[in-house]
Amino acid sequence: MPTNIDIAIIGAGPTGLCFAKALADTGLKITVIERQTEAALAEPAFDGREIALTHHSAQLMRQLGLWERIDPQAISALRDARVFNGSSLLSLNIGPENIRARNTRSENTASENTASKNTALADTQHSELGYLLANHLIRKAAYAAVKSSPAITLRTEAQVLNIQTDANQAQITLADGEIINAKLVIAADSRFSETRRAMGIAADMHDFGKTMMVCVMDHPISHEHTAWEWFDYGQTLALLPMNGLRSSVVITLPPDEMNQLMTLSEEDFNHEVSARFKQRLGVMRLSSTRHTYPLVTVYAKRLIGQRFALIGDAAVGMHPVTAHGFNFGLTGLASLSAEIKAAAAAGHDIGGASLLLRYEKTHRRNTRPLFLATHAIAKIYASDSPPAKFLRASAIRIGNRIAPFKRAVAGFLADAH
Ligand SMILES: Cc1cc2nc3c(=O)[nH]c(=O)nc-3n(C[C@H](O)[C@H](O)[C@H](O)COP(=O)(O)OP(=O)(O)OC[C@H]3O[C@@H](n4cnc5c(N)ncnc54)[C@H](O)[C@@H]3O)c2cc1C
Image (cartoon, rainbow, N blue to C red; front, side, top):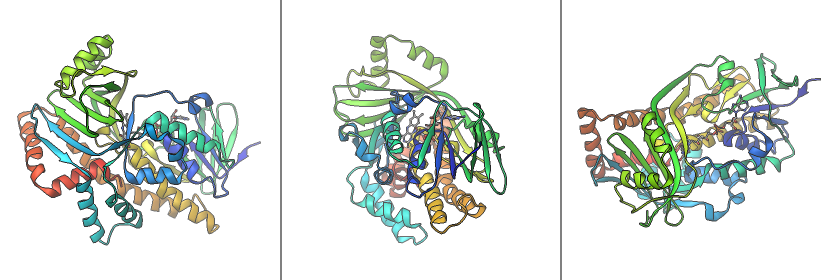
């Protein structure tokens, strides 16, 4: 006997779980299909990622009931950001005042949507750019929020064999033989989404040929709650300030150099990383496991299909340099869930083509310009050719004096929609 539900979500990552939770009180029947075990979702392992969140994202997480499930001690303030280039100590400095200036300007342009305006107003009251929070804690809070909602069923250790959609319904066949009929299928199964591929949706995928390593390190000199993005020659370094004398360290290198770094003993690793950061924070000491990720960005050619939509990284897999991935995931799920809620309340089709088209248009408009701009910045700063070096240095030098440039970069760092 097939199971009949309203919405099937494939992927119980932070985006899939938050999307389910956003619709938990609508009376809709929702099933989340995940290949990991329930235990792995309930107690997610530390994965090295510290996620920089905008005020807007924090607000959405409060509305979803996630924020209060997280220990306030685990949340650190991101007050300022500094962008360095090469060996120069000159940096582009970005603080909350740059966002305020940007938002004041955007309030004056009547074209922004209501959500943007609300965020602009919220941001003017803050003295920091945003917050920093470990990815596994977001996942844990999202799982707990979903488990408290009777309308949501979790199918873990599940493998999707087949998906078919037509004008009336979608049908998912699982490897254990279960058939699920839904009005709408949502893919939230990562930037390498198998569901996107199964639905025949192509994606622009760019492999930077680099590997990112993330870990937590202690250091004797204070970071003063400032994030660093350091586009050095031959490597990119980032530092995200955690509470105390501790930071999340992100190092981007070609894979062979990364392999060498990963196999260093802890003592040699500490020595090597302190030297790479030119001892600017003193002698750094590893205080977590080390994790690597391939640097691949993705933008799906279409964000929707018949009774089907992509959310999270499956839709837009950002370059982490501007810390937008999950921020965009939250913005997208908020706009799609708002459309679905309105349709359900009015008794309309929750998987209808016009609803999905509106989501696609909104999410593309909110993400595409920053995706392209981030991509361009990442390419210029990854290149050590003489023209690129000139451009890189000029951008930092001139950027500090030209307010619109700083506002634009502040926008990349802290205004994810
Ligand atoms: C180093 C690094 C730093 C980052 N820093 C930031 C930051 O500062 N700010 C920010 O906003 N973002 C950041 N991001 C991005 C952020 O981590 C992602 O945007 C976010 O995790 C995406 O969530 P998701 O739920 O869409 O996908 P994922 O987290 O990839 O989850 C996908 C889920 O789907 C499941 N799944 C996959 N395939 C299937 C299948 N076929 N069937 C069933 N289940 C499946 C997986 O097991 C997983 O649970 C960073 C990313 C990296 C790598």
